[in-house]
Length: 625
Image (cartoon, rainbow, N blue to C red):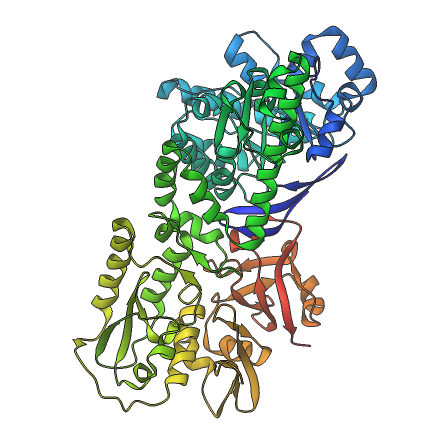
């Protein structure tokens, strides 16, 4: 039903299959009023809509709409042939009161042919703790009771819990045990209207921690582009809102950085078709209905353009840069980044180990990114000091040894002081040490992150000296072993690189590209990120030296012969995996008796491998057959 195709941060480009078509996530579902439409839903597809959402509560309570929907289906009713999601009316119950049978509305959504229907959850925002707990219990009961009624419809079971993070997490964990298909995060519209983006980030993080990774997450009512990058980076896949129409009704234009009033503009700060064909004055002079439709089209253009930008950021590995750039549009979004800063340990498990684009510093939150947190942790836990003394030097350009080749000959562990803190000289080419761009002067928060890491590393290091003899040899061997230890774990460097060694270097850069041991090609050092690609011979060495579960992905017996021939590993055939694996780590694919089957690169972490029943878990590079 859902699979991951690309990823960055906790965001993912996925494929969600429904009865009326496949949706590429992340995306926005425009809200369609079943009784009144400024823009025809079918026209929204030309603006970028893959799916829409409409309100089954309105349809259910309006006899004319109800009759048509039951006789002809919701797709015919609203005039949209693609995937249609229906909301149950929970927000309307919260806003206006009224009564609605929670099971009847689920069955109604099924009967009108909704592709994705929603339970009637109990909206709890600023309720006191006791009331919020009762409302979560009601929501969970309704979710369990609704599952038998869903039929072929995908069922959305909503996470509630107000602003209590532990209740959100508890609700999400309980819903993980329900046979739902996707999970909205509900009760957040008032929070977004009040621009409480820090609370929003905390709510999303709490819910995501409890939800299973193979089910899409829908941030209910989030329709302004301002929050999209942050919410996607935290793992939201679907969004919906009527903001495009509400703002148009009010004479406002949505922009990625905020909202502006048409009445206050002399020029239109946008290049969408609406703004390219009209001036601000021309829009103001239109008849109200025509102007409302034009502004709605503009708002949808901006909405879907931002989603395309986000998907491209995921593909290119620059989603965090986009998040940080957008956060500067509003002080409350900076508060949200402060919340995210405290979640880097959780976010790190979803972060790819390297990217095709350099890491760009954009401000004080950049050094709090999960990838840098992982780099620091892996150096502290895995780097082995080669000498009994340490020499600290200042970075004067990258790669370090190109500017100072004499450092490689020092009989001391050389730590290079730079924006990321003290980095061992041998790791000079590893992502993101070489592949990062920082200003000459760092902000205070970033310096504190780098200094804290450096102090911890120095506590492990041999004594610091002012100078060291310059007669050391075998820097190349020390370098590849250090990279292997940090990449694969302690002991990997010696296991991989021992015996009769041959290093093949680039004729243009002089950098190591391939490593042969005892006549066999064991690994290649990638030019782009300074990390190793394992060959089968290298996998055999690591497999013999490192005990399970280290680096392992364990296969179901049915898949063993295919993977041994070089076929990739699909998630549904994974029995277990090393909990320490991260997306894009090199892995050893083994059978249930720990026999080596193949080597490759994982696309998912362990939790995801065990949860998904479709999609690739490991891209196999070389099989054992």
